[in-house]
Image (tube, rainbow, N blue to C red; front, side, top):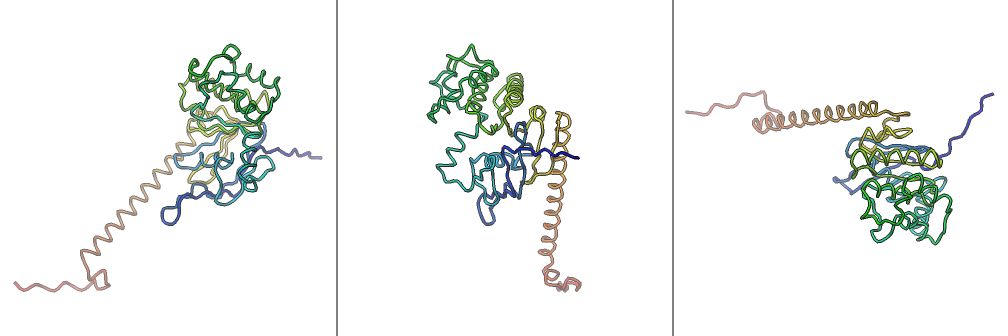
Length: 290
């Protein structure tokens, strides 16, 4: 007898469409994307510039709304919530880590970590918070303010803050973008350890193959569509996949350029020979008397 285990989903989008603008200037950032982010996993989203990866994260997290389709946190459909309920959901069930650390400069490390709980009027699970402080390695910095920390330490505070309320999922948007390579590695390792030690879920947008290699799975977008998934990624495999995207984009641009040149040539030919433009191009032009 075969036993099937249902994989629990922390967040997902179904037939997601996001259009910015309208008419001839409309940009279709997401074009019918359906993807699920499994609970207890670290997933990276990658793709060329303009592929829609940040838009996907923002819509999946409830920071932006879809033009069509649906986004879910757990079993809750975000489009069914009014502004107040959506705000409460983001506060209680979603964590965020951004490229900019977004720490409150007048608060200590501990106060920044517990800020979401304090704003919600909740004490939270203190054992959980203390364990997080140990995981991120900031026990000796709890009374420091952000200006007294390195960039890597500040981002570790941001990671701890994102997990403090025990959210269903943490969304990280280029979390190592403002860090040097060593600090970036520390933060990525921290995200991976937090997922493994707490069974929480992380969805990270990145352009860096080395960063993506820390994830359990990578999903690839191109032109607003989901085009590939990769489990157990390595930096080399991710880089090869991204090079394939770049090659395809270059070929498409070359084709478009060639088409444009051909159209320009046809237009020039038509302008040079008005008779041909009107279907009479086979007749010789009349001679002009000298």
